[in-house]
Image (cartoon, rainbow, N blue to C red; front, side, top):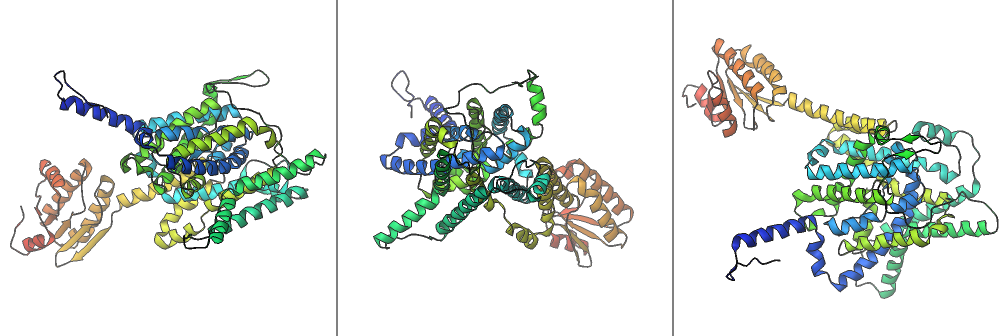
Length: 583
């Protein structure tokens, strides 16, 4: 770190501290400065292995997710390589990978309507919004999206994505995009393409078998014989790159038939070869008939997508950061800011290479972690694999059967549907099923309506708890009422009615235990003034206990007539019984 020295050769503590602070701030913004100077050769080996493994996973997934987004397959690869470079410089976790995901692809399909120009501009605007949220520290807004809402959305998304791929798995044509029409079109009488069905089911069975084999391996041990460890390693390797393995085999089979003029399978078709041009995102579009769609019109068409997609992207990134230790090189309070900043910068940079919105990927991050990645440099290796695929393999992607990509997507989204969450919510807290079901059901209609409905129901339940606090009532000859939660203005009318009905109408003295009250506002003070007046008019006693210093200071400043307060309930009971000790 830089050393600050005065003209006489002595260190200046003030200047040195400023230099250290500025360098520390630079490392906070560029975490690469924390690990790159001490990078080891042994780390390079592990980063190369992990990067290649994740690269073999992300290439087939990116091609498949572009299909979900309704875009040409090359756009999936355009979106898959920027995250590795950006996260290497600005990220703080060695495991996290950024790229196209099933949920972001599904959300894009709702708003871009198969138009790459809309998708690229949406990426840029999402990046700007996410980066702005990081700079302005607006993470608290995401706290209003509860766990049941997230689970309801991801479960609905899993069903929507998986069902949407049945048309490719079965070789069906002319299937609607809207979910309910999609269900009708899929199950109405139609001619199935037997080769597509056969290949799709075979790919699906292979992926499921390899997934099961990997999960059944269990923990390894150095005490096992060499041939057993070798077999376990072989099974683990094949099951880890299962997506690439299935797509490669299916493509070879498809190519073999195409060479001999047999068009058995529905294939991906024409793709744009080569790397994407580096250019500014388009802020308008000219249609084939010469009509110009302005920036304002595009923004209006994107509509709710400019809110839903950035927020859901951040939620995914934050969830992965929590699961895989975002705070390995930064303190936990900053982890949200780091996640938002890296996601935002990735989307901004991605819009210059024609990417659609990306976020953190659970599946690929897990693979990255399991293969022993040591630093974020593993993401650079993954990005290089994607760039090599774009540069040299795009003509081969022409022959990829859509049924194989559909099998990859279905296997990828199946774990997103967590059927056990319903039983958990029912067992822990039944009312939480309401926001879950509202989000789950309405997301099949319009995803933004599902999320909004879930948030509204959650906020309604939260506000109800604020407006109707639980009261513990004990009768010691004197009525003792304890507030189980804080006291805010929505609850005052309810509290006044309850105290009036329990104490004043029954002619009982009252002790109000406020040990859980941490703050009051003017409405609360005003209602307490009226309550004290009613007790005085009827000649009854109302004593407050357990007031915190901040609350007591506010009440004293308000000069409430007849205010009596003591330290504890025991002291209040003693005071009411005839030996007053209140202030």
